[in-house]
Length: 66
Image 1 (cartoon, rainbow, N blue to C red):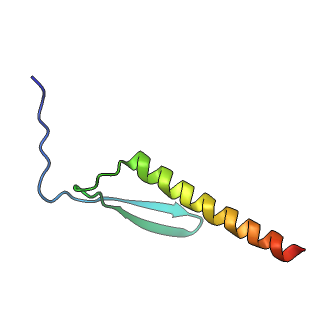
Image 2 (cartoon, rainbow, N blue to C red; image 1 turned 180 degrees about the vertical axis):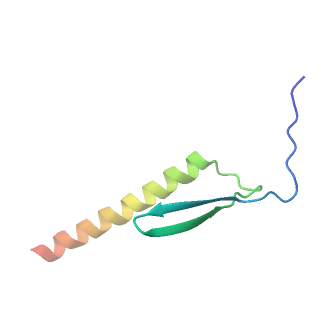
Image 3 (cartoon, one colour; image 1 turned 30 degrees about the vertical axis):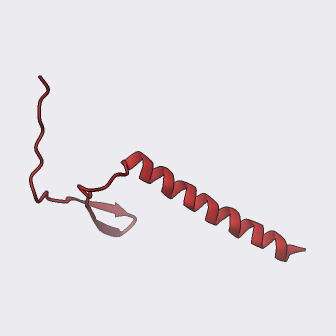
């Protein structure tokens, strides 16, 4: 028999403070209950998109350097 974990209809978002230098950031994290994408999938997608943007920026810079 497997344990069943029930989730409340409205979950409280994760909140914390992060201090960087003299600035304090209040961070709130929300997760979608209907998302089909895991956190690993989301992070990989974000990293890949950022890498594409950087690669395009660098290739454009090379075009104008000649």
